[in-house]
Image (cartoon, rainbow over all chains, first blue to last red):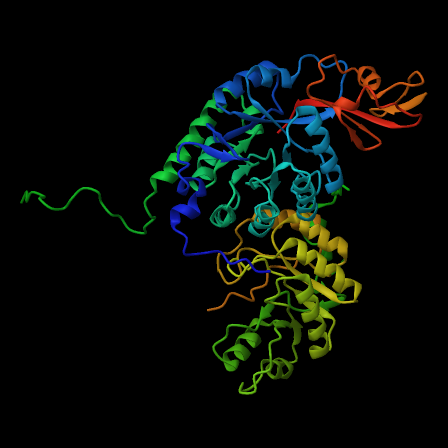
Length: 279
Length: 212
Length: 68
């Protein structure tokens, strides 16, 4: 059935439902209030030490982790570092191609991390890592029925975002461009449409290359940003993590501040009135 | 299951496999060769005369038409003009929100136009007119089972494009930007990837809705 | 008794439980961040010690790793 979007809703409500509910100082996600709107992945770092320094610099409270077969030879553990920093480990279902695999991985993650939160990824191929819309929605519905708090990595399709929201997802996390590509937000129009029609938080996930991309996501009205490679693979991950933190804060502040409209012609800010006649 | 795309294919093959098959002079679509690669919609014109002149000027051989309730007061008919010009009328399922409605509309169109070709549109809302991926794929599968030649209007998602191809669609027709928006191709990267993953099946976004 | 453990064929003594397979797989004592599936079904942590394995079952023992 068609879903009519209420175009009468005030701009502020459409921009950030959190703001209109008085949530000006915190990021509402999954029924909790978070101090940071930046979620950071833990993959791709050169060492656990580099990861730890970057996570601290990012100010993130939520960090993503994956599940893989136990390697008896592995030294140290990402989870020990995350636990040591007091951060919330959000498991993902990276590498799953079907709803069935993603549901099983989420069930494993629930046991491993004692959390019903899951970053749901169901991808369509190994070259684009783009989500498979049909499998994703199927997995989301099954996991919500099982009581999970589902945060789906989705493409930038506003219709799929609405269906995920209607299914009961706690957020929608559209991609800006392919995972790890650093191509930024390829289609800001679609992100804007998703933000306008969403009643759950929108977290821009994937494609961020540099802090201006993260700032743009927040200026478009996203409630948060999730990134990994742009920090982990930067020359100096710790410095980049700090830059990303500042960009997310700046973009969010700018969105709330309300930018000036774009105009074709100049409009000086200095008054013409009282200009001296200098002959 | 993962679908591995053969990155060894030559650029030319990926760009237009038709060319590499020696099809340099025609556009293969639905098992026929067409002289024109431009498909034009017939909606939104101010008059049938304006439509007729534009269709002739476009050189299009395929033009899209819709089905609506019979209006006893309507003067003239788009189909008469199209038939008069000897063009192929491709019916669409515009205005359908569910697979069920789209399949029924396609069945009506098959009767009305005596063709099993259908431009399949299953949209998700009336503001973006973006396709609903799940309903679209469902409708495509049903229509292919019924023997239709299915040309789906889809979003610019390469994964959905591949699934439509795998289901047996005769083409995939990704949008450049919202219908009628005149916003051009918002995400050329995705169109490029869709072309690589569904080689030979990506018809150019139609200009149908580039209305005045 | 032979089972498939993380893709390897391993020999466990008859009557071995999921908890034994976890140790065999190399997961250390602290089991936080570790989860087990037997023939695709997740086994809850509290049931590891009382779930006996049978020959030819496939056991996956996974743990947290860095990911995006």
